[in-house]
Each structure stands twice: as structure tokens, then as C-alpha cells.
Image 1 (cartoon, helix red, strand yellow):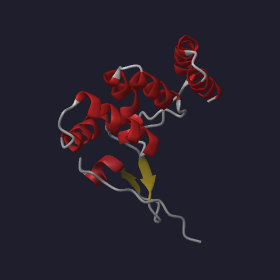
Image 2 (cartoon, helix red, strand yellow):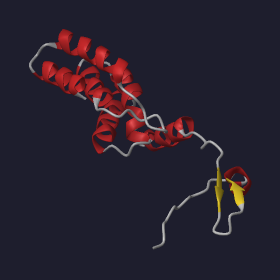
Image 3 (cartoon, one colour):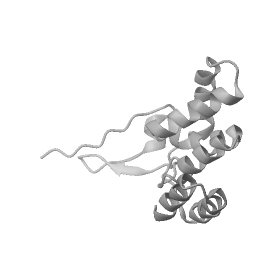
Length: 140
């Protein structure tokens, strides 16, 4: 997180080369959640720098996971701005988002849980390959 913020500060102070080097270093340390969304804003900051530098395609590539799967408002705004630079049709954005959600989505690993009677159930058998919403709750 510190390196992401440092790179963003370097960029805003006009030191593009140092910012790029810091973003590269920060990228080596970032981790991702189960869906592939980074845990720091380094990709968002880096995407903003790429967009400002005229590399909208690179910005789209970096910011798409956080915008599409992470519900990050700033990432979505950056994606929309970059998308408008490379696409003449703003209506194409919704199609792009849908396709990216399908491309980036991942299936959950199978797991087994016991019900209240102690009977084990495999998720794969319950979901039968369909989209399934799981809600975990703990009655008191």
C-alpha cells in the first residue's frame, strides 16, 4: 500500500519515471482476492498514469478486474474514461463489461459442509453446475 501511494505521489509531483519504477516495484508485492482483485490501489493509480500518458489500452487492462469484480467506484470511473478513449461507441461499454465479467469470473472450489443433523453435503452436488447464492448465517 505504501509503495502504491508513493508512486501516486511521485506522479502527482511530476516525476513520471520514479512513479513508473515504484509502480513496478509495488506490483511485485500485491496480492489478490479470490476473484483476482488486487488488495492495493497500485493498479488503479498505475492505470490513471497510463491513461494520462496516452496508453488507454494499458489502463483498461490494469483496472478492469477491480472495476468489474471489485465494485470499485474509482476503478470503474477510470475504466469508463479509458474505454471512451479507445471506443467510439459508449454503448459498447455494457457489452464489454458483460464479456469481462464472464471472462474473469471463476468457479468456486468444491467444498463439503454438514447440516444441523450432521449430514455432509458437497457444494457441487447441491449447485448442480448452476449459479448459486450461498448465505451463511449463525442463529443465536
